Length: 297
Image 1 (cartoon, rainbow, N blue to C red):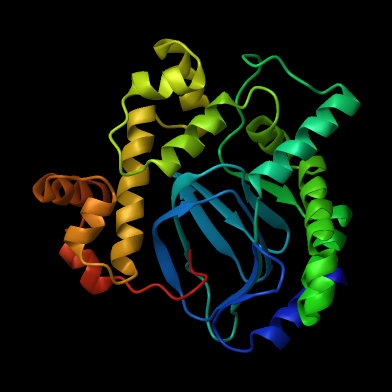
Image 2 (cartoon, rainbow, N blue to C red):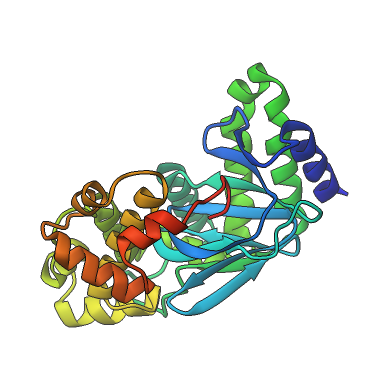
């Protein structure tokens, strides 16, 4: 019933294709009414919950397909391919995007670890995947409904928004994606913090040694831990972040030279070679052929 109520709210707020703010910072509703193939994107820390249709994300060749049975959680910045291959006017993609506030998530995770004794040693345990799918349990569903219901009243959104966001974050930490989320925001989150650092400096040349030093690890240990967490080597990950960042800028209307510079490329020829090697098209072809409706990625 709660999912149908969320869907009804989206239908009311967004009768046509697009994306709309709810009044609570970091919470958006979206509708996509046409199929979009998976294209390069950069997911920032986010939860994406679908109440109609299905969405797809690909991380290093692994496909994550999710719908009203599973929500997606990306606890740290990730270079992915994402799209809505099955969306149509008769079966639109309807969903909610909730950005994860790093400060609040860290506070909640540390509180939980302190109370429950879940704190880990910084170097211990396997690293969960950078993307996680989790079932819609009752706590998550109810918290999400209470959150999107605030959009109809600006005063309620301003007064109650932060509290209801915190309630949803807690449901995520307790749910099926909890291990990945806690690893990113709790004790032992050196890799997640390095990814945040890399994402904030996507236009700067960073070596493995630079990243390992930021994580406080040796080069060998950092390389192994990083690949466990992201499925990619640090250099491969950094390159994917830069190229996906540029591809999104180009799809958004930025010219190729500016997008290359914005992603940290000094040589336009090197940018074109690496772009074509990764996506199978030159940047110019990409700019001519790619148009992304809001909410598609």
